[in-house]
Length: 268
Image 1: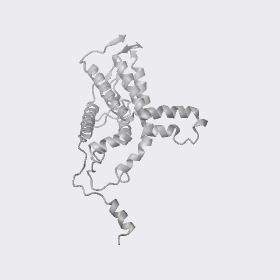
Image 2 (image 1 turned 30 degrees about the vertical axis):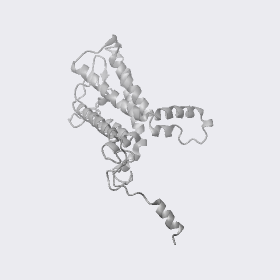
Image 3 (image 1 turned 180 degrees about the horizontal axis):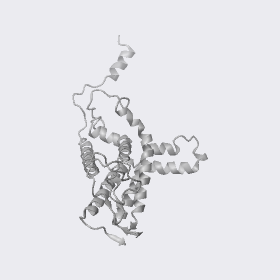
Image 4 (image 1 turned 135 degrees about the horizontal axis):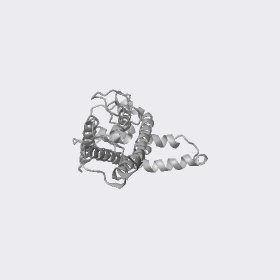
């Protein structure tokens, strides 16, 4: 006689499917594009950071964000707004004190975790596609346990965004006068996008009003929370846009500094 428990167990039995996935679409395109895009950006950024040249345009006070703030005694005149406490050794980038925090903020970002987990670690490469690893421990062991510092890296990223904002403001000087050119538009555009990406962070959303029990008692924080929540819905797009604006800004400053072409000036 078949018991009720036996019938339930039989009903819950999983189908024996030999295929790794039943997906017939080109699911591999998204992780492949992500892999190519992130790899290209990392290679470009690494080369530029260790070039140690073509990062500042003295005439217009343009400083690339890859070298901000410039802190080594190798910094060209006028580029070091906060002094030069670091020695000039080729393994030490000009922005050595800020680059690690920016890297931590990006690496621990919730969207970037998804991106490189899928594209580089195949964990998993796509929805409904098996994980590329035999075991899954999540973010409970070394080194992924350090992903939990994201909320603290956010504060450092906010400070660095303030520094980049200062760089964009200083760049409105042409000599000792006010000046305005295409470089200013690019620098300001990059700063705006960096702030949008930073503020759209999940940690920022929680800091703003994540612990409030009564929104009605905190109307200002509630409005800011609504604003951040709208940006948060576009966190993925902003993550990619800022990679593009950072590369564009750096390339433009590099081209001007190297003398490849001149800045398009509107005023002075």
